[in-house]
Image (cartoon, rainbow, N blue to C red; front, side, top):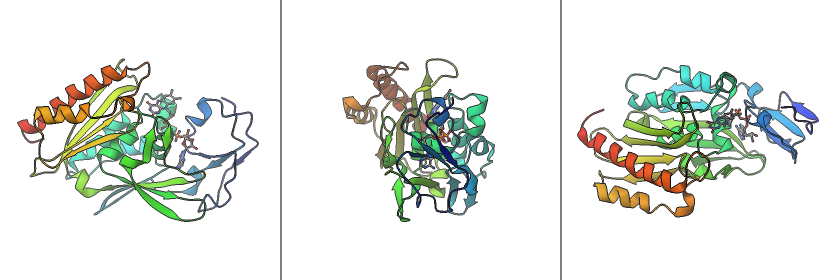
Length: 274
Ligand SMILES: Cc1cc2nc3c(=O)[nH]c(=O)nc-3n(C[C@H](O)[C@H](O)[C@H](O)COP(=O)(O)OP(=O)(O)OC[C@H]3O[C@@H](n4cnc5c(N)ncnc54)[C@H](O)[C@@H]3O)c2cc1C
């Protein structure tokens, strides 16, 4: 839609964007959300996509994803064979309720910064133990654990003018065994719950990431495989107000799904190699 309060678009910001940040500005990435709704508080859009950030950089340390990498480019990326969890890139891209336009324009960073419960790039990066590099308006930089970035529905730790520059996924997480479960009300619908489990090869640890069903990502870590009761109790311990309530599912329904899927994941890992 037309954003009729916007009076200026900065097509080519400085290499270190933020120095010219002012009230009424918004970073523009794919624009799929920015242009989908009224933005009466905004006066200026600052385009990040012209900065030429490398979308995907593979190294011995893992994968660096530039925040402006599109969902389309991530989907097309072919991970090396020993990155067992690399198939989660495609799985997570497919978890978008996305039209052709969104698929081609939306960015990984835009999805994370939107911080919606059903943000599949959040699910993927939390499950893969990523860190995010943030650039502040004063030129300083900080790194946050993906699990700590989203604090609620459409809420995160970004300060005004702070920009998400890149996402780093460690190779240790990419080599893990993994499985996932997702529930949607309709075939291509928005996730009611999206859960990923990972396990370090040669161990029986378990990292369980719960998203979409909760207002922020919840990661449950077990050094050794929990028994069924311990796993159920860890989900029961999630505070009642953290379960998300919207037309895609009530908090009770989402808690029920989480307990059901968690047990399936536990038994799937117990059953053998994957
Ligand atoms: C029909 C439709 C379906 C959708 N389905 C889903 C869905 O299933 N799941 C979902 O999560 N979302 C969904 N969305 C919302 C949105 O399109 C996606 O979250 C998308 O990934 C946003 O990415 P973008 O690059 O287009 O962000 P933009 O629209 O450009 O920006 C989104 C927000 O993030 C900020 N931002 C962008 N990049 C950065 C950065 N690097 N640093 C700091 N701030 C930044 C912007 O200022 C803005 O506030 C949907 C939207 C529509 C219209």
